[in-house]
Image (tube, rainbow, N blue to C red; front, top):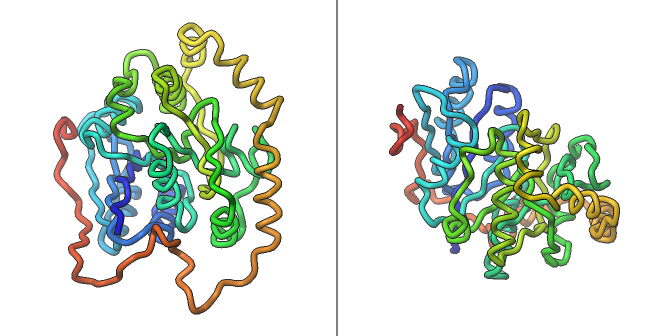
Length: 304
């Protein structure tokens, strides 16, 4: 069975959103998947209790680390990514709601094309990857399993995106290392740092694509910090015109319409099949397979 990428959740201060994210992550991800909950000294007592309870019951191979002092969103995430070496890593927003099979399908995109550096799934609040309307925030899907099954039926075309989007993104580790990681000095937000990383990857010949067979929900879009977009515009003068052109041309319109049509056709679940896993995500359920969940001591650089 193919090992899935590491999932990084940079946990935030919204306790209710974190609780929903962890519940969906558990329900929609293959047991034994490596998950790192990385805390830049942000969550409070209630959030810690949520993490502790989830860690005690999860079937995922989960770690939680907390810095004693915050160093900032981008610096912390770059530190976590660097600790993962050249492994492929999926960064999941702490208010995201992944649907069943999301990670296996993202991983399938990277396996299918060695030139892909980042793969971003559909999202109801995904900007250029938004569904059902580009650039708009729509309500979370009422039935995550139905939208997951509809997305799984899509042809895996992996169309180009201007940049990856922060609700969920799978990053090829070798490509990230060649690009030099995140720019921790220019940007305060993951939102802007991810755009910058995507553009540097594209400049090196890599692709940033939509994984059109996966869907991850989110209550709202990410946002830049003050000054981030101005710094992006200085470094990448064509970014804003390129983004505007993509939104106006809407090259993913037919793909979004096809996903809507497939969703309308999805029938009731097959009781004879575990619909939480596609073939790439097929899960063993042996309780003695070495899975563990632990409140881990800080990794290198995480404890100070």
